[in-house]
Length: 244
Image 1: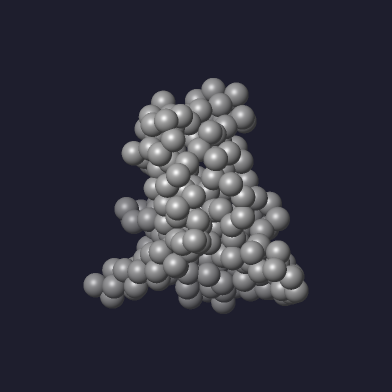
Image 2: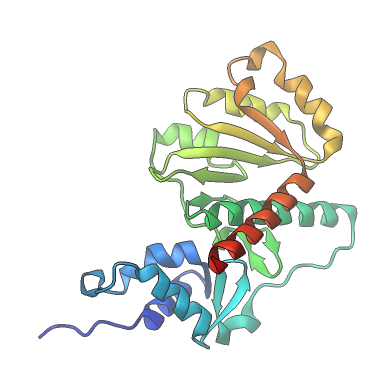
């Protein structure tokens, strides 16, 4: 006797439960086949059906650009702490920028990773919107554990190799991260530093040191404002895609 296949909505619900009640669309696309039998799919574009379900089924609620939650669990989402100190303000900006960087790459249907388990932005834990809960084994464990695992945000390409390694700098020195990135110079990846405009001169000073000559052409600096505008442009681009 054949086992009855579950519906799209039932499978999406299981994905969200397994991801603590909410998930980015990219993760739903990837994980839904753990619960639903893909061999029984007639249409060649099931992603459109998944989009239709999360947008129209009342058991799901949109809580981010491409993020959906189980409606019945909305009251259980984590709360951001109140900003009381300058440190709180810096942490909020750090989490905001990390959030945007993850969403930007998710919107382009690639995989993302962050090690930060404590950052919360708009009542959502940042690590739960990344599509990977651990770094793929694209190289030796020692390199991943010693040099890559603690990088703020990692964008992966379709082969699960790092496309960009990104650090969000608020108050610490760039030098430690230049040293870290220098250790993994043999990988074909870019190194992106996000920081306030006031830190640009410090970045340039470190970048131009002889010790980092082998990676200087792959190290880039961008500001918080740049990331925010990038994020907004991605949103508008996606709206245009949907309209067209």
